[in-house]
Length: 362
Image (cartoon, rainbow, N blue to C red; front, side, top):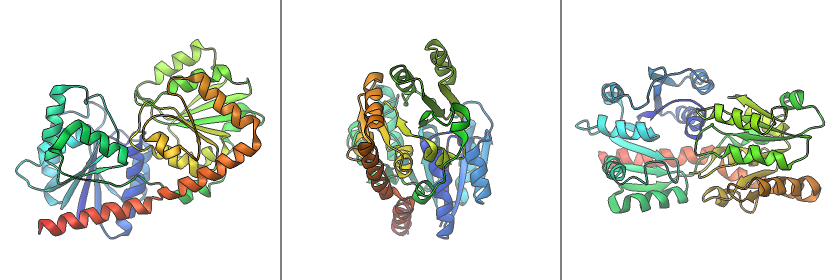
């Protein structure tokens, strides 16, 4: 079995992180797996995959991921593979177009419950055509599947849910770093959020919540993206430059999560949220926005706060800060919940789908 995964880039993000964890597992199973990347800008994720021996096909550095040249590059590349598996919109669309006349087995993973296309009637027609070109659509949560079915109606091909996964041992057994304390001081209380700086995530609510927390609380934003300048301006406007630290993309996430006192995911919507599973496995008290999918993932383990409500987020943090018993209970429940999402289950689910598709194609 030879499989080509296709993704827009290997910048910070859930789907991108998934590639670094999942593809090496396929190799260990004896599956020949490679990855095509539209935007070849070097990233830490790219370094990780190279170190794991995963062959990368890099199209170009920078520029638009919707460059139509990618279609022809992809069309030439897919010839020697049994299955083409795409991730993210540009890859999904260009993969479908590139396969016209090729008749390769096509799989795609849907990573979110919504996006900016779904409110546009014309783009919905394109989506309906695009998804019909796929032999199988994998959704990373039940909420993701329900949202996609609502968007497309009865035009979907075979669809199944395979929940995202993480290397649970890497987060449960990580040793705490001394990076955050070196910046904020050993007596500080450290809040961490790991997420790309893009519209889906709600960093502004978390930054504004710092106004409601004591001076010894420091916020560390790990990630990068197109909204970085906007966040920098907000931090400066709120006079928080000494308490809010933009850390960029990091490769030592397990150690940083272990060092933190609280982990927060502030978001407008999620398909699954790998960082939620990672954060819970770290044993650090976890707090997330009460939005679909994310609330299902966290409820009963971590705490939830109202969307776009900085004061409510601050109240949840202070409730944990003032109650050691609550902190310990939340930590214990988070680890127990996080253990459910070991990536080995995900790899098994994907492999089963691949085998069924190849068997039925024969």
